[in-house]
Length: 161
Image (tube, one colour):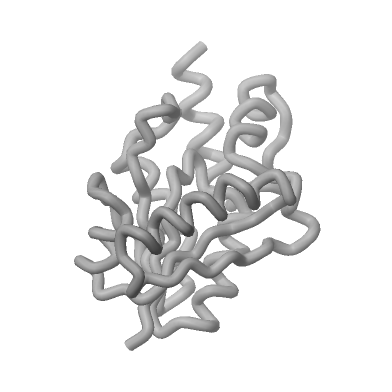
């Protein structure tokens, strides 16, 4: 079974993320959306909340599951019997950082491949950070995230005010 791991903080999951997940699901027998704790980010949603939002977003994909991890990514890939790491590239500016990560992951475990996927052009401008900022300022994020994520953002941000 070919398994790919799609890691990220997914705070929150966007339609760009979902586009990459859906296309990866066509290429691999199993795709694990691995939600990470990123110490350099201050997440809006807890790890459990992010897992629930991702799970609801991918429930229509029978070969996709959501999980969380706190270990080194290549160790998590081994633990889940994965062969590949999926990384999304929105713009050329993403490439340098992602390329460095891919090389480091290869150095740590040369058995694990990194595959770069580009989202549809309609999502290349999209990031979780931008979505949160639009939502914080009262803008409509309905075109950028699944409906239940939009509602979760609205609820979470109304509590913060």
